[in-house]
Structure formats: C-alpha cells, structure tokens
Image (cartoon, rainbow, N blue to C red; front, top):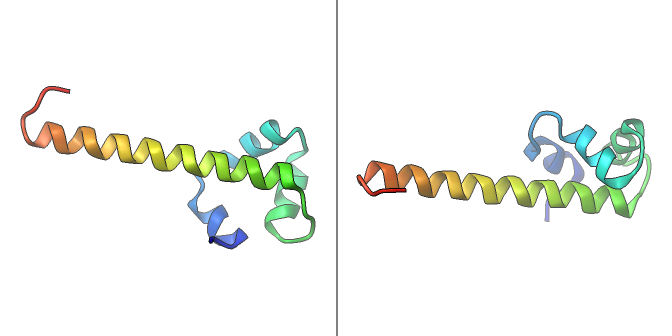
Length: 74
C-alpha cells in the first residue's frame, strides 16, 4: 500500500483540484490530508480513484503503442 506522499507523487498534475471536486472539499483540505494533518475518507477514496484511472489509461496507451510497433491495426 502506498503512503500518502507516494500517492501524491504518483498523481498527475492538477489531480489535487480534481480530488477536491470529487470529494466535495476545498483544495486546502486535500493538501492537509496529504500532509497527514487530517483524515477524510472522501479525499482518500477520490485520490485512489484518480490513481486507478491513471494506471488504466497508461496500460491502454502502452498496449496501443505495442500494437502500433508490431504493425497491427488499432
């Protein structure tokens, strides 16, 4: 399991704002959560969802790249 700092480093640019929007909290609350100054299950869930979406996107992009390198149609 990732700790909060590793999770933050794994997220794309602009993810903190997206986490705040999804969790219905302020960006400051998200920052405080990543600094371990607060606990908020909604923030944690939103961060994990965004990370999962990013990993799925990267996997799909990698598969498309590999298919293109093999000369297959996408």
